[in-house]
Length: 329
Ligand code: ADP
Image (tube, rainbow, N blue to C red; front, side):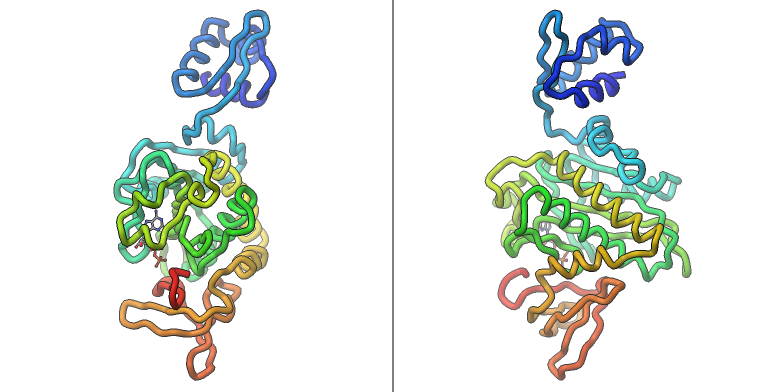
């Protein structure tokens, strides 16, 4: 019921809606409406109430509360069900557990804080409270396991498009899984899957975005490579709005792939906004580091490099980290 009140207020932003209208619409008494409004106010919503006019939403808090986010995202597929947590060890870990227990495609897990956020290859992902977007999406694509890298590229394209629509042109993609602002990392993507030899059971794609994070609060080794949207824009930015833009962009690109086997648009975005292609980069594996020119992406989202002999080689994303020669990018 509280959700219905919230939905009505959100849909009628800036105009008054009377207690009577609300009570009729939702099918509860005016006292119940009043109680829900009181609760919403306690949660940080600024709602004006004027006698004979009714209620009007003035300002919403930037919590990622599931009700508010589901209303905001209003999606049929990706994000139709959102689970929100104050604190969690890792959204990917919980998403995998829920996927294994049958949670449907499009389910989103989002947390204010991760206490055990993960990067690739056992690395840590810093996820301070209330200032970032730490979320995971459960997917059940009918693909073979080797195609999972495409999901990372679709996600990178979606995050880049979502962020560009809000903060503009300085957003780039560092192959294969980082989103960059001004040569520093503002978002990381972690794709994990459960699969048989020839089929995928589920994929979980984790997206961690430093939104209003103060990068000075990161540990030393992260501080050097990380930035946040606030550090870039100088303003607090609405996390809710960013989630909405990214999930919409993701849904478009993902359904294009699943329903039409069409990955070209995502790859075009990954190439167009790449901060890796056309550069000399260091390719690090566990065993060695080589310097090569990053020349192109394959249609599967793998990197093509030109080695020192001038030969073109394919680099598989699962095994490597890419760094610039002097900077992170
Ligand atoms: P890579 O940068 O090689 O692709 P990952 O994608 O696995 O590595 O990301 C993990 C790394 O990202 C960590 O080792 C750390 O250096 C850095 N990192 C951790 N937390 C954050 C954060 N919130 N923002 C930016 N970078 C981070």
